[in-house]
Structures are given as structure tokens and as C-alpha cells.
Amino acid sequence: MFLNYLKDFSTKKIVKNSLSNVKHSASDKVIKTVGIIFDETYFYEREALVNELITNGIAESDIKILVFKNKIKKNEVFDYPVFSHKDLSWHGTVDKREVREFIAEPFDLLINYYDTEKVALLLVSHLSKASFKVGFASIDKRLNHFMIDTNAENYKVFMDELFKYLKILNKL
Image (cartoon, rainbow, N blue to C red; front, side, top):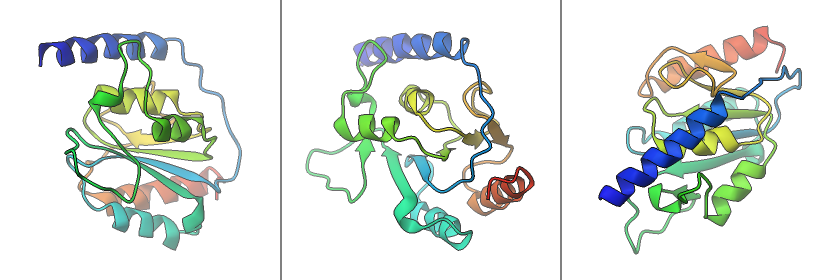
């Protein structure tokens, strides 16, 4: 327990220090590929959120999902990639292959769908090679290019606002 706290503390310090050096570059690419990082602790409507993306013109094959769980039971089986605190190293890197592949994917849009700061989520969002990152206003402002001020339970409001502003920014 105490070692997990120390690991979280050191990883959070690494992420916060690297966020101070971030320079956001403007991207005028049209959005075709979408990555979504969920925190399954507070939000269970994964399929509904994906369906909102599909109804707004994103192909289902162009949507990739990564889910964070606080604890993964030994015999639990998932049909989507899942990671937890155990997949973080002490040096602010991720050990799990599926997470490294997700981070390396150059998404046109990354949706950081979590409104509570957790070290593992911040790290994966920060390391992602996505060209445009969207998240909640309650998360560190340096992490996302665009922030929406609502909570995770209101996924309809989040998606309506997201697509309204993506159209204004000519990204669709």
C-alpha cells in the first residue's frame, strides 16, 4: 500500500514536470481516427459513448478504446484493452504492451474521458501521440488542447459540445 503511494507520487511528479515543457502545436487535420481513454471506476456507458461517435460520422473501425480500472481481478477477461496502476513503472513509463501500442498510435483525436486526476490516466494521456486531445475542464489544463466543463456522467452533453466545437474548428 505504501509502496503504491510512493510509486504514484513519483510518477505524478514526473508527469507534472514534463507537462510544464509541453508546447501544443495547432493541428488542422480532419478527424478520422479516434482514441478514447476511459476511467471505468466512474463511467460504465462505454458502448453509448462509442455509439455517439458513430452517429456523428466516425467509423467504428477507426475508434480504439483503452480502459483504466483501479483493480483487475486475476481471472477477469475483457474484450477491450485494460490497464491499472500495476502497469506503471517507477520511472513514469507503462509496461503493458497494449497500452504502449495505444500510446504510439497517432490518433487525430484523443478523448480523455475521465474527470478525476489519476496518475495512470494522466501518464497515458500525456504520452499519447494524438494530434488533438480533448478532456474535462477539471483535469490539468496543460494536458488537453480543448476542455469541456461538465462531468463524466453527462456523456450526452460532453459529446454534443465536442461535436459542436469540432464543426466550428473545421475538424469534421
